[in-house]
Image (cartoon, rainbow, N blue to C red):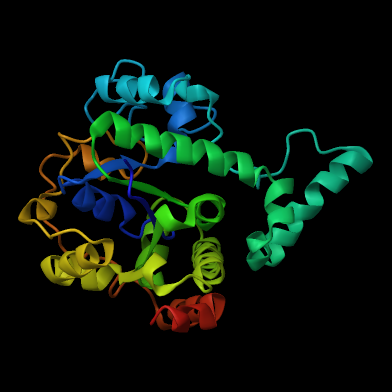
Length: 308
């Protein structure tokens, strides 16, 4: 029986795939990757999700071909693509007229005040209760199919976490993973974003995580810095294992991929040569003083909250 689902909450380009891989190296943990993209993988639909890598499990097969995901579907007792695993926070395709305007109200409220998502009425308007039920059903099926008591979902969304937490708080854990905003902005800019868009995106995502985890009991939230994790992976993973209630194993340092059935995440997981855990300092020296000042103004006091 499943003992807990471990959610990795972070901004993009913050090391969530690396952490997920390391956790998946433990014999009691199943690493799932970014579960909210499962429907896109089942349907092979790039209009839903269009990553650089193939829409395939890390085993190399499609989800429909993969014995692991077929076993999960059997344990679930219904098709995987019947699950609602993404929240309804994005703008509806047909938001026209008075009804359309009303449907946008909760989305605008959440964008302005993410902490409101703690309230059931708001979550209900956005389909949160159903998403929570379907997620819990999937995690239970994964545990039944693998006989492993823990699974990791690195979809990163604090909203999805709250949907599951409100339904199943005793079996839901969050890891709040933070990375220096300068490194994240640099990584995003290499992929085409402007400095402003990248910095504001970091601030918004980390502010969401801050607000939607600040009321959690201490045994439900684990805070981790990407830099500390990369500089001292053994000690940080041991600390995390103690929090979860399992023993640390050296296998967690090997960035397991071949034995995993992981979806979404960074394409780095397909590179079998990338097994070493090391701190990426590529951003250092890449920004002029004016750019650094602009970034700091854009991220504001959210950076201080996370220790940057």
